[in-house]
Length: 421
Image (cartoon, rainbow, N blue to C red; front, top):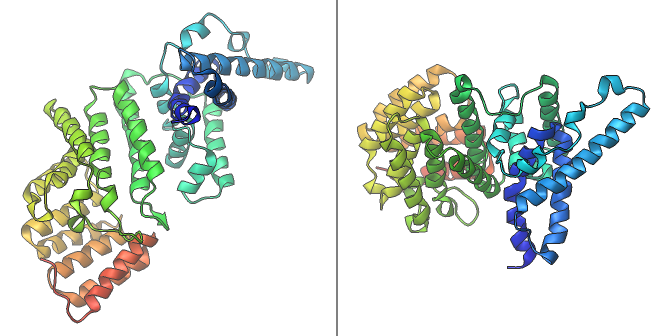
């Protein structure tokens, strides 16, 4: 490994800690981020030749703090020259360095930074974008590419989120005790959304975006390191690991999805599965299971089956019933319907799907139509299955999923098809 290759992952892991330290000490999200980027550039140039310092985080915080205080002083001087010092000049104690600067490097502000990026005052899309930019260290171009929007659009979205933080005066601190559970839940939801978008992209030419799944797992590991006794944090990390362990077997060579029952399980990452199972088992043993822990338990049952036929569907159905009580939603009911079809037969599943359709919240969603198609296929109702596969293919914006659904329809239209049992 070359020095440059060794420095890059170290720097990326330090980004949220250094940025968090500066935002806590000085405020000014935009200016702090610029200062951190300058410090990272200096490190990438100096460390490969001179070697990494004994305390890389302290080095970065010191360099970034100097850049930021220089900039803030320059801004204050400019403001005075423009005769607006009374309205715009920063308080002196927010500009001048103090003894606190030396203690800053001893504190990890990653979690506080995550809470700031996931503040309820920001929209969900802004929370995701700002988390990836500030905590994940991804470039604006990379985030824009992942979500298939122009870089300028994503840049504006991130800028508006930072301005919102500045205008509303959102404090850089850990949540108060009374708001802790709600704020942690928002952080986990943002990380869950990032992972899901990476694991099954909602649109575009690729089924998976491994940069997003990897970043979601990395950030969730960070939160788990900071909150090791939180069962839902452990549950979310376990869910991501148990799900992502199947990635290598999820697609054919041309990118077409391979359903879970047809995947080559020898290609699943058994070490990752073992880690996920250990995490969720330990979390469930503490009691008070939450939705992420239950979802992780479902993923574990799937992953521990050596063959698709060995899957313990009654246990999965029971877990979905628990999940539906904890987190009632049409998506959970849709997933429960799949388990009902395996345990009680496709007709029972189709009856349950009628309630999902009547709910209205998944109207026009390709997954609902695709599951109905699958159940009709299992029931031997070929024409109904074919029509629903065709309809589902037209509804999805994901090109790989569209190819898969069209392939299922084409298989049904052949003369030798026999229904899946």
